[in-house]
Amino acid sequence: MALREIIKFGDDVLRKKCREVTAFDEKLACLLDDMAETLTSADGVGLAAPQVGILRRAIVIDVRDGRGIIELINPVITEQSGVQVGNEGCLSDPGEWCEVERPQNVVVKAFDRNGKEFELKGSDLLARAICHEVDHLDGILFIDRVKQDIAKRS
Ligand code: CO
Image (cartoon, rainbow, N blue to C red):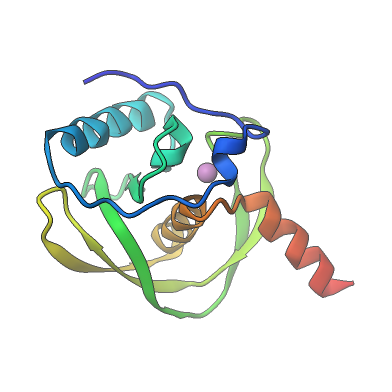
């Protein structure tokens, strides 16, 4: 395992749409291990592959609820309900926290590192983290959501 450099806001890489993972191989396992180590080292809640320069649909999340690192490959949010408004940050934008509106609950379909499909339900911080990280795979950053909220209110 190795720490990877986290790319910061302003880099075009963070604005690209990521491609699906098609090979569930050693290279993917290595990427996921490195992302987990990088996430833990940075004391973050979530990290998406584009944040370490890999334009593939893979994310890791750790909401410190005892279940450890959650790996989501090719995640798709299939259901969402409720609303939560809370402060959100990003490892690619250290020190900035903004109020962002997210669903209170989500259901996400994804694959594990072995290519097995599964479904995960998340609420509260986990729902927020899933939405934030899935956004990264489409080049969307949390500051975009803040701007949308402000536009909606005015
Ligand atoms: Co982020």
